[in-house]
Figure (cartoon, rainbow, N blue to C red):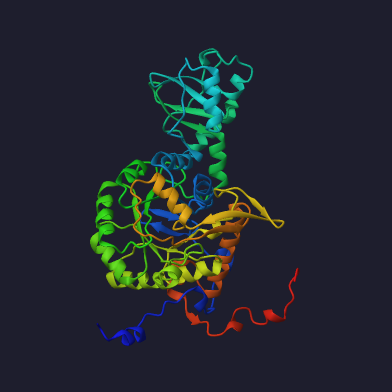
Length: 480
């Protein structure tokens, strides 16, 4: 038996967390309103807000992903559902808005009014292009079917003389045409009459309202999705509907996972984000084993619903993990975006994560309490809450084993908990608060943007409780 246990304990790394450090205030040259917090999620995805929603089934489905992308962040849709359901969730984000909607719901002239109404109701749309042999022959709106007989063919009630736009139309041209003809939908057709897409006044308004949104080259909202590195079928199904795939593994530093992720990286066309990892050696081994890595999730066992470090006494707190990644990146001369993942509940936690080298922060607890997250509001003792559960919890694992054939009972113990979080309101309200808080935090650090923060941040260790709000014990707050 080795006899160097004591030496190994003495030489052990200091696994510091958010409560252990503060950023020391520095001289600032700009006001908080002038500070930029745009950053990078992965190699090809830029975000105007460095906030990413976690792929938890109580956090991110299409509702959260749409709301967050509109504001400039990014959502990662969870994988606790069938492949078909996850693809449809991604499609909902892509369909939510675009200058030209390419994935258009259409009907034929022989479709019954009853069926057309059902399609519009099911997909929350107010109009359908009518297509025959790929050519546009009319358009059907809710106004057209208001008093129509349910068994009537749409050809008898549709608008036949359709105002259209060319595939090269600009936003301004589309707005002028829609205003001139007092219409809200503008089919896009080529010179042969073939339908290429649809422009709606709603999407134009949304584009102007959400000018900082995270959009792809076609003007659609961007979205990412979680996958198992072993589930190549899911990855391939999602590849053309998302902008990034996120390997959803609690402990990525594993030879079998490396082999699977390496194969996946060769098969997909979108960005690949790996993780979670917690040490510099894990980063080095990962980039050596996988030819293409576009982003890295850092942190093991730090989430509010994760009990890995309690159950197993193994973990890498988010702040420690990010610092390890950043130092290893510098050593290897790499610039792969780091996503700080786990335990981030305040703008200050986010600032610390960014200060030690992260490009974005991933949050679950914060977004779980928003209106747009999955799950219903629950009233307890006069206050409202929303459900949350860790993806390592017993109930989440049970669902994953039922819908994901690549999920295996590799561990015989749950590493997550479930419960409720306080209702926070609309996601926009929460993001406005976090954005303002993060800008104020950067202002205290003397930084004008996130990269500037990497250079300027100076850290101090918290050695006594009074530093956390000196004098607060003597203050009586309302409601005490």
